[in-house]
Structures are given as C-alpha cells and as structure tokens.
Length: 148
Image (cartoon, rainbow, N blue to C red; front, side, top):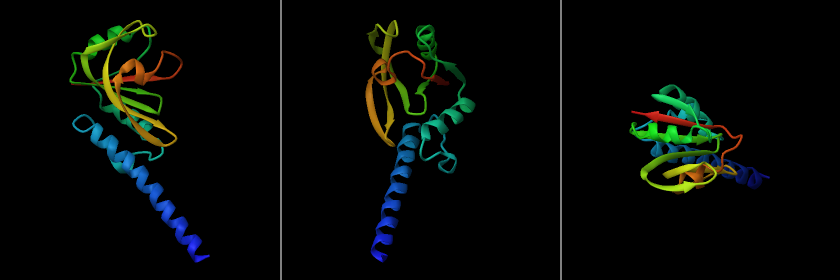
C-alpha cells in the first residue's frame, strides 16, 4: 500500500514538473515581448492565459480572418513583434516577413514563423510558414498581437 501511494506521489510530481516546463518554454519564447507571471498562468492551457495578458499589453490586437490577412500582415511589418494565437492551442511569432510562401487558402503570401502547438497537453515546437502552423481559415479564433 505504501509503495502504491509513493508511486502516485512520484507520478503527480512528474506531471507538475511537465506543466512548469511548458510555462518556462513559453516564458523564454516570449522573452522581451511579454513578461509572464508564472503564478497567473493556467498550467493546463497556458496559451489561454497568454491571450488574456497579450490582449492588455499589446499595442494593437486584431482578429485574423481570410478577408483581412493581407492588410494585417502588411501592418505587422511596422511593429517589432507580431504574435499570432489560434484558439488556446497554438502560438506563433513571425520571424521573417520577406521569406514567405503563397497560400491559396489564405489568398496571400504567408511569412515564416516559429511557435508552439499544444496537443494532448504537450507543447510541440513548429518552425515553418504561417500557413502550415496556423492552419486553414475557418471558425477557429485567430488573434494577432502587435508590439512596438
């Protein structure tokens, strides 16, 4: 019985450690743009917490749609940092506006980005053109956060 309880505590400890690691990865990813307070971050859905914080801290927040994507990306070039989130599972930072790939689905050239996609509670790093990270236009909420 004691052995079973000990094993449960160890597994619980590993689960908490993995959640904290996720927050640390995102904290490093957003360094210089957003100051994350680890205590205020939802460990299960950290991108949800980042959405709330970025909505307050960003110089400009825009809902990204197929209809406005070209204008939004053109405007984003005037800011030092452009972060895009998809729902509560994906966060990406535009890394190079000049290196872009045409997208039939979005109807514009989509720049290169780097970010994280959360699947089954695990953050998976992604470095690719935005069209391959944020997916096709649809009903998912996509937010653009622009920082000077």
